Amino acid sequence: LPGYVRNNGANVEVCIPGGEPEANDFLARLREELPPLAEVTDYDIEEGEPDGDAFVIIPSSEGPRLSIIPPDTAVCAKCMAEFHDPADR
Image (spheres, rainbow, N blue to C red):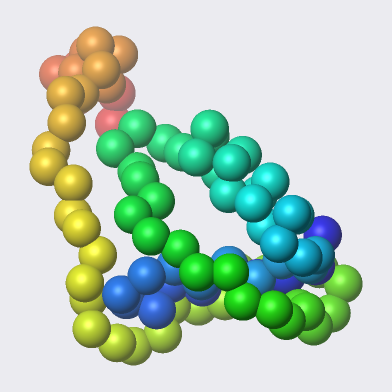
């Protein structure tokens, strides 16, 4: 799958091949597989084709940091056990 993903501070930009049906399929799958507390708050679909034949992660660019920072969440029992075990370092 050619394309890229990039964080520009205010949002995440994903470029994948295909038209609007493929983009909508991608968005539906993305929403189904988001990690806990992650959310898609808005999106735009624009025409264009990615360069190259591989999917790449482009380093983040400078810009205003407008991302929502989620609150702390509960730590799982396994992680807490590891945290309290001095031999697990």
